[in-house]
Length: 184
Image (cartoon, rainbow, N blue to C red; front, side):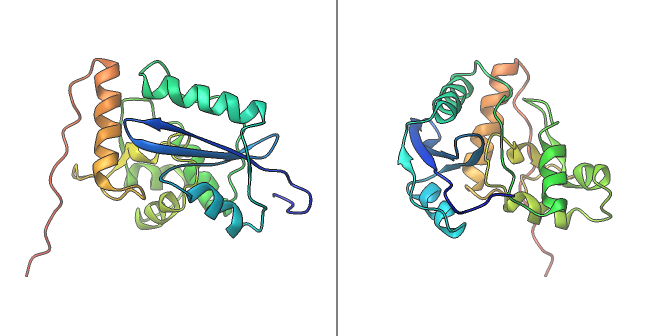
């Protein structure tokens, strides 16, 4: 667990075809990767941590370099130390999600079965709390019937990420079904 006293944090951001991607870390572990302006600082404040220093850490530099490689289609997985900051169940879901290969998808039910959960709904809730977007590739988890499911950064970005990975694996575009409508 993260001890708040005396923890120095660092942050940086990059512009990508996905938008502004922010990264935050301590000296030894990545804490946050997300899309949007000000989200890293908000995440750190919620943990009781002081605002981050811009740049200034080897880990932030390496995280930015690996993210750029991902966006350029030259990186399929990340090799960065992370601090999950979640419940035991969330961490199990996030670790299992990290096993989904680049360019592939798995269903919420698939993840649920592999973490010993009878229902996919808790998996969806755990993924919605993912604070390490791309590092924990929750965009690769979709509904069993082919719908996108959810994504904290929005379904349009989830679809873009899946298309990006399909393009760089030489696979056909991932076919996704439109969302199901509730019957009235």
